[in-house]
Image (tube, rainbow, N blue to C red):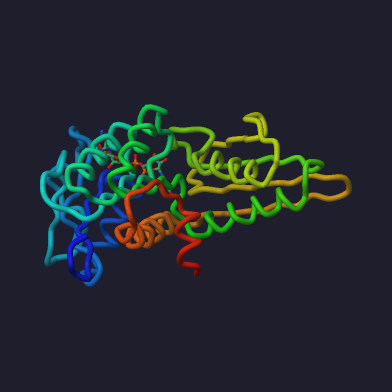
Length: 251
Ligand SMILES: NC(=O)c1ccc[n+]([C@@H]2O[C@H](COP(=O)([O-])OP(=O)(O)OC[C@H]3O[C@@H](n4cnc5c(N)ncnc54)[C@H](OP(=O)(O)O)[C@@H]3O)[C@@H](O)[C@H]2O)c1
């Protein structure tokens, strides 16, 4: 990272629902961020447009980025993640991947990249969801095998992957706590404009416990991604998750 107070940031997926919010927040906070690159699909209708609305600055949306940077934040598509990996490796920059539904091959490339740069994979960048994952692991451990775990998630109808990456991550958290979790215990609902809802239910004899996370605005993903990005640029090369961020900088 450069010897300055602010981070040179590239956003891939800059014209998307989440990427646009990240560009707006980073563009409005000159003390901590310089948005040096805003990348969208090579055939995006947004190419050439400004990635945020400040009157003084314009970081124009482009199909790739060839300059220097400290951090790449990716909220795009599996193909867009490939572009993000390429930029981060070329610049020795930290890489935060929020894109979900990544194929195994891309995950392997990310694991290999993590030997050279700090890489954080976050199917959900909300600090609240990371906290829920810690609660799920603890609940699974203390309730034991007689409680059946079911995860129900709901998202807007345009979401491409099902079940959500967050539901899979929460299932992993339950497994870490010792719960047996099969795919038929994860249920995905699609429709309307639901930003994101996850219910993790532990059903036992005579009681059930539910942990619920409801996203009411996409800004929580952008806020969490930027907070995690500030942390990530200070880490050594390695493969990180939001749980690592929570452990090293408790709220
Ligand atoms: N980690 C989290 O907390 C979190 C939260 C919400 C969503 N997500 C995930 O983040 C991803 C994006 O979500 P979204 O709702 O923002 O989607 P979206 O609105 O469809 O935006 C996708 C963005 O990626 C760009 N893009 C697509 N293919 C690309 C490519 N090959 N190269 C460069 N850019 C490319 C699109 O460009 P154009 O559309 O302009 O062509 C657009 O800017 C999804 O995988 C979603 O599941 C993660």
